[in-house]
Length: 158
Ligand SMILES: [Ca+2]
Image (cartoon, rainbow, N blue to C red; front, side, top):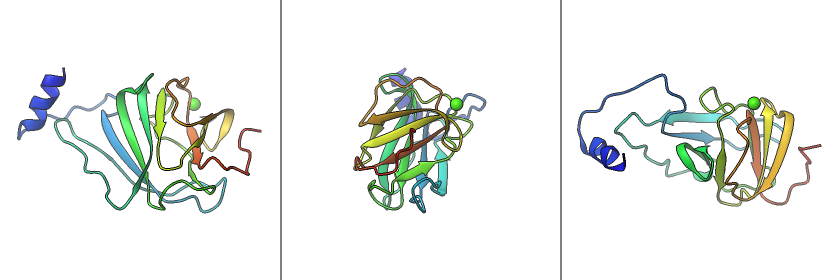
């Protein structure tokens, strides 16, 4: 399979498939949350077509990568922030999108995004799970989430 992917990337022509979600490789760019508990604006959302590669947004900071499978496997989406590394204000995602709803099964965090809280429902509703650092297994029920630095005065999971 890896050989086929490399071959497809080298080819000039590529076929595009649709219907399968999530796409193998996507990226989202967020603005900082206007205040704790408020959603970050989604500045862009792009997925690579089959046989193509995404170009990382050079001016933005990698915050988090979502994976479709446990232990960082399967499709993935990189989440970038336009406001620099995580601080106590953090970044909030009110809805992960239809393609990732109830599909995030593991994730990695970067650039001071040490604290994460994932929620069963959109807009930070339902069951809440807190984590510190990268997480190899997460029950795939997440619909919204929050990431920030480890220092966190505002308790989301109460
Ligand atoms: Ca859910």
